[in-house]
Image 1 (cartoon, helix red, strand yellow):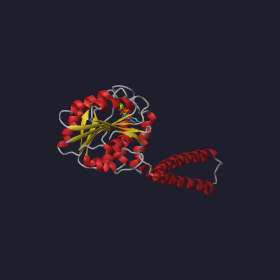
Image 2: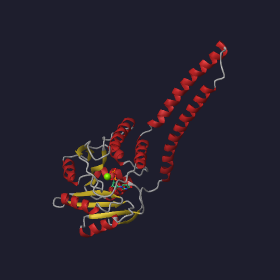
Image 3: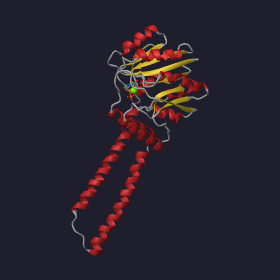
Image 4: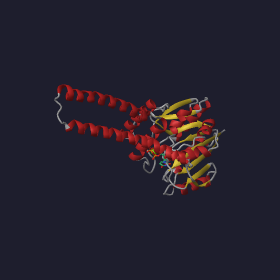
Length: 305
Ligand code: UDP
Ligand code: MG
């Protein structure tokens, strides 16, 4: 039985040795295993560190991108190359405790094809991240046909057959936790306490988190487009009422005054609504534009497997 562990790493030089060692401690004596580091175009000595570790441990392999392609694509590359009977994915920064690996494997052996992890709601992630993450998952679960566990991350175990299915996805704007949920199979979750980063700093800025959230929602739901139709109908209905009122005052009561205020307000309001939904349509159109080009998800500069 062979276990693959996939670890995307972007400027994680200080973490490579420690995480390799901790994973080896978990797996070495019990299974044959491989650790696949995906160097996502790091600008520090991450790749050098990985090669160093690989020299002393034949189970450590790597893929190195030609530039930074982002976490999701790095993860996809790892899944595309993993050879294990199951594949565990986790972050390089030790926020995902390697000690949980045994627990993941145990559930897999019980017959689950997907074992995801849910972080217990505690310390160490900021209040802001906690609350926005909660809102995001509630929203996406409501308006799409996927059901993503609250507070889930890309720390999970996938059976080989699930990985094989994931490899078929060639879509741009990858949102892997959505795809895993979409695929179905026998899924179960285990809880863990998130740890603090071992070294380095978070690569997910507020801007990146926002665009990741938009990516997730627009990849899995067209409800936002439908909202525009609903709002459109509602506004048209209000306009109809208002027009009736205006006509009645003019022709029946003959009391109509030239009212620029109401005109100004309605023009501004309608203009705003139109711009919002034009932007929204642009978002989806942009997605199609990128997808029709059918570019590869990533470009590999060098690899050891
Ligand atoms: N990561 C990556 N490419 C990127 C950004 C992040 O491969 O462009 C990796 C990073 O090295 C880490 C994981 O994705 O292993 C999660 O990133 P991070 O810990 O910075 O995110 P956070 O835990 O703060 O949400
Ligand atoms: Mg992290």
